Amino acid sequence: MYADFIGSAGSIFDLCTPIYPAYFLPLASLGNLAKAVARGLKDPSFRVIQNHFAVSGNLGDVAAKEEVWEVSAQLMGLGLGILILSAPGLVNSYPVLASTWMTMRLLHLWLRYQSLSVLQFNTVRYYKVIQDYKFNLNLSLNFLNPWFIKVNLKRARILVNLHVSTSTVLGCEECNKMENILSWEKFSVPRIVFGVSLSDMLAGETSGLKVKKLLKLYSKEKYILVLNQQPFKDFKILVSFKDGATSLSVLRSVWQAYWLYKNHSRQENMFDQLQESLKELDHQFDQFLQQLRDVGWDMNSINLKVCKDVLIEDSPVR
Image (cartoon, rainbow, N blue to C red; front, side, top):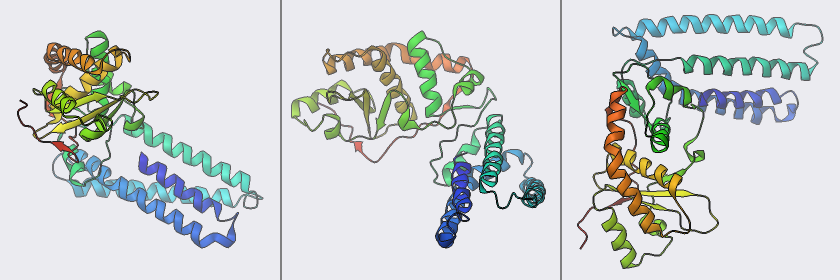
């Protein structure tokens, strides 16, 4: 989906060449560059989709059938474009030409979104193929088979938010309907920043007493989480991971973050709020996991990435 947006931006450069003929070369070059980037983003996820349909190892057959349909569609589109451009007066009417392009591009994006929104994978192994491409695409395709349902960060937010509010969880179909495949993590609320250094977590106040208190507070966890302490700033959660942190550690930090978001108070002491949230985490998290299993989520396939840019060495605090 992101690749289609980037490809559309590349087409805009091509569309501008009749307006600025003197800059034809740089505009056409930028257009081709954007389209090349779009192809680079599309190919890894597209191969995963092809693998999904090759249920008996017949990837070549699936790819050949797809190529036939693609070439046929391109020929039909080319013929339609020639007919439109041969209409009297259309070639010299740039507004009509631009509006025609915009209509067809929006139709293409809408059809792409509709096709991705109904795509179903019956196993979780295809996510591993995407990871092998080293692309952090964070795809949000629908996994509807109840025995192979995988939790990613977007779904974790949806599930945790509902559990903290109502002590209930959603099934896969309901969660997929709420999952926005176009949303970006940095615009999610509450804002959670993973992989923060200890000095940034304490806003530069790295006194031995505060650090020792923080490490003791999270002695049983594989992460450290604090609230943003800067005044007049939006609510933000800062998380740093210890050596040995896993996807389950990320899920626990997300649960604690949402509890703090719904129960925090700027007037209260930060350490008191953190201590209370950890008590609630110990009391309710196991129940949360069991509820997820009961409705079909696969807790052995949690797809939550541990940020390893900054890791805290896990050692006993005295």
